[in-house]
Structures are given as C-alpha cells and as structure tokens.
Image 1 (cartoon, rainbow, N blue to C red):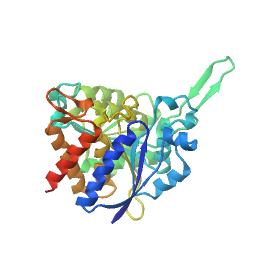
Image 2 (cartoon, one colour):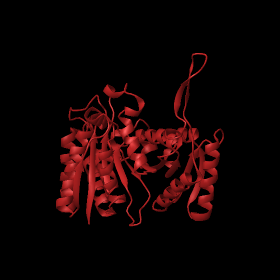
Image 3 (cartoon, rainbow, N blue to C red):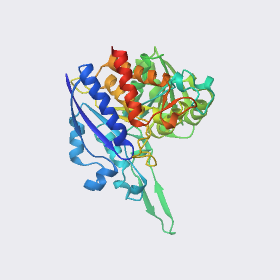
Image 4 (cartoon, helix red, strand yellow):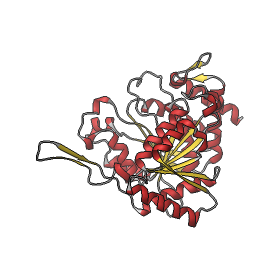
Length: 368
C-alpha cells in the first residue's frame, strides 16, 4: 500500500527536526519497503508571512487528502501581537478541528538511560510509562461564546465557554478504554466534578461507557488538580489517563517534564475511522517552536522522530516498524548520545543532525 504524507515543518525548530525525520522516512522506504508520496506546505507564522493566514484552504485540502500529517511546530515572538485569529497557533487549531482530530495521545515514557535527567528522583520515574488521552476538539478552547466585551463602567469582560456533549465524552472514553486493553487495562479519568457541571457530566458518561462496554478494564476517577499533584508524587500509579481539552493540555505537559525533557516526547492526534477503516492522524512533537535555539542545529529531533513511530503504528498499522524505530532511539540513548536538553556528564553531545545520524546507524544495526 502507498501512503500519502503531508509534511508541515512550520516555524522555529520545526523545519530542522522535520528534515531529520524525513531522513528516517527515507530509511524505511529503502529498507522496510514503506511506499509513500510526500507533499509539503506551510503552516503557522511562516504561512501568515506568505499567505496572510496561519492555515490556508489549499493546505487544508492537502491535509484532508493525506493518510497522515507530520507536523513540526508553530509560533514565535514575532507573531505574538497579531490579531487572535491570525496568530500562528490558530493554524494548528484549524487542523485539529477541520480534520476532526478529537483524540490526542501523549505518552510520557522515561527511557532507562535518562532516569537521572528528570527533575524527580530516579526511583520515582524509572520505568515510567503513562499515556494521557486528551479530548482535543471540544471544551473551553472551542466553546462559544468566546469574546471580550466592553462594559458600561469602562471595564472589559472576557468569556471562554467550557462546553461538552455526551457524544464528545463517549468517543474519547472509548479511545482510552480501547488503548488500555492493549496495556495494563487501567484507566484514570480526570475532571473537576466537584466544581464544574461539565465535570459532573464527564464522570457520568465515562462511568456509563465503562459499565456497558469495558467492564474488563479497571476505572478510577480523580479530580484534575489532585491528578496534577499525584503526577509528581507517585506518577507510576497511572497507566492511561483520560481527560478534557484544558486539563489534558496541562497534565500532559507536566507528565512530559517527568521524563527529563519535553524535547523527547511525541504525540498523535487521531480522528474517527472512515468506512475504509482508515484513521486520519496528525503527528507532532510536543516541544513547541523553541525560537531561542532555532536555526542553530541544537534542537533534539527525537520527539519528531518518535512521532513518526506513532504514525507508523496508528495510521499505517506497521507496528513492527514502529517498535524498530523506538528500539533504535533507546539504543542511541543507551550508547550515550545526548542533545543539549538532555546532556549529562560523561555523555556524547550531539546536534540535531548528529543525533539523527546515530539513530539511522542504530536502525542499520537492528535491521541487519
């Protein structure tokens, strides 16, 4: 089968890490018979500079026609003062919304070689393997009204609306439970049912889906603020955590930092399967555009390369290839290669290109 892949390098370090990910893609084409065609387009700040929009209709048409989208990063200080709808980050939000990517998968995996790089004690994070499943197209980021209005007393009032329907909660819960069946069959659902009516509905719906469809999976409920505390106290008590858009944004970044560097972690944003069984997906590193190191060859490409591994697994169904790529990354870290963000005494410091070189060499050895 031949796959259509859209590359969206974006801003900041996005183009640098995407170049290295493309080299890994080419390795799989040559050595594992991965057949694909690639298109590339602009998104974010660079798209605004070129087209006046952070996401154009033409780019969106390519994204909708692709089997998978590989995304770099968007944003930078030069675009921070643009009108809200023109800001670089709106390009990513449009992709998520228009492609119907309602499930964001954020693994927090601590490689054994990096257990000393975390800000927590090694015994707290060693062996950490959490998957946070975040609802991505509802909640306060998309709810209406969303506005700033003038009040008669010369003050202003800002309104963001937290909004969820039964259907939105059901479908993200099913994703979490199905993934849990492939892991340790444990799901923790995080919300704020003590103060938010959306949290009350969330807990009710998740409980019902569990009772009727996934009784073989263990379900626990946790308030989102307590979950944040538990992630730094005893993170390994969790396996799959399912939560809404806002809390998922916060908790997944917190969990990412437990692993030693946010530059290490990938993500997948998935939509519903179509009639042919295909599942649209957008795959991106979680580190952002890092404008302070952009163009210097210092960025860690591992998160983007591991995002490709998630693409191989979830959109292409090539689980063996995904496992191979993840083993190659693990081998490189065990061999002592480090970019600046994860550098440790006595290790071998590498730039963006050198780290990708090491991963490609590890792939050669593992595939031999």
